Amino acid sequence: MRNIFLIFFLSIFWVFYSQSQPDLYISGKVLDLENFPIPNVTVSLNNELTKTSANGSFLISVNEIKTIDIEFKHSGFKKYNLSVSSRKLRRNANDTLFLPSINLYNLLLDEFSVIANKIDTVYGSDRFSVEDFEMTSDGQMFLLSYEKTLKKESKIFLLDENQELLHTHVIPGQSIRLFKDYSGQSYVITIDKVFQINVSKTNRIELIAINNDVFYDYYYRIIDTISNVYLYSNFNELYPAIKFFSSSKLDSTHSLIKEVKDDFMMELYRAQFKYVSGRDKLWAYRKEQQTGIDKEIWVGASVFTNDILYKPIYAPLFVKNDSIYLFDHYQNYIYNYNSSLELLDSIPITYHLKSKNEKWSQPLIQDEKEKDIFVLFNSGGFYIIKKIENGNVNRGFKLTNRYVENIKIYDGYVYYVYRPYESIQKKFIYKEKILK
Image (cartoon, rainbow, N blue to C red):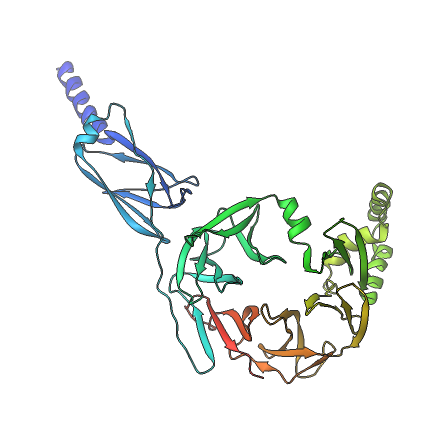
């Protein structure tokens, strides 16, 4: 009798065990059309469900040896179904069937081109929000977009001159923003890396990782060029002064153009040394011994810059018509230099001083095509854009929407990112003609 029960128990155990163990696994890798891995692709087979890893790979179990259909889904790509025959499954000698790489096609999103009396909707999607954008010299546009949050996954969209979507590309890592250097080359900055954005002859986006030190020490720092020199600064948001330099393209000689200093902020900055503890003073003194940088600056940079009173220095420089315009908002002048870096004139300005109705807002914005310079003012959440000429500003143009973001000006139009307040709409790009 005992043997009968043992046999019965083993048979039941074998049935359950055989049901719980899959017959085999299927493994593979999901790539885009440029053979870059696509993470977070949903891979489903009957009731089995998994997602691709950071390098695009997946592993899913098969419980029955019969012809199966595997579905691949991702928000930015067209859905794809792959059929694997029962014959192929039976012929597999191992417990895992390795599939060749699976390529997904980019999903072309629906676009909105609604024209109103004053506002044009340049681009909008019911699935993706636009975080940032840059325009190219040939009329194309790069968009930094995301479906839920930049932290999870973001993409670069390429639009043509008619704002039609040409291509999309997944960005590796967590994106921060786009950047365009002095030559018009665009980049996407992530937490860990910087990628140069290139467009192939077939209008496909290519991301090329570049050295962070090279980017921040060179491309990020150069403001513009004029004649045969580069114009750059030593700007540091932790120090209330900035120096502007020129560097020759021919022999790499460097020359100081001008220093701009916020005297009031600098006085508070240095005075902070008096109020820190003896331990902090000792630390700052040792830093001065090691680096030669004043101990008061060490304390100011580490302590006072965290104070609500501290404001980073703002002194923009623009090139227009072979002239350099350097804005000193602390001495209340625009300094005008020619292409030989000779000071031609100093023009007084007052637009940045306090006003009851309008508040001056940074930054100053230059029309990327016409090169005119505009000043932003904020009145109750509405931006007023005023062109500056000879130190004076005109009456200005008030934007229709409130609390807009990422304002850029191109060929007499102001572009910005906006989502209506308390709306479920995604962030769109709008443009308005600047009325004179």
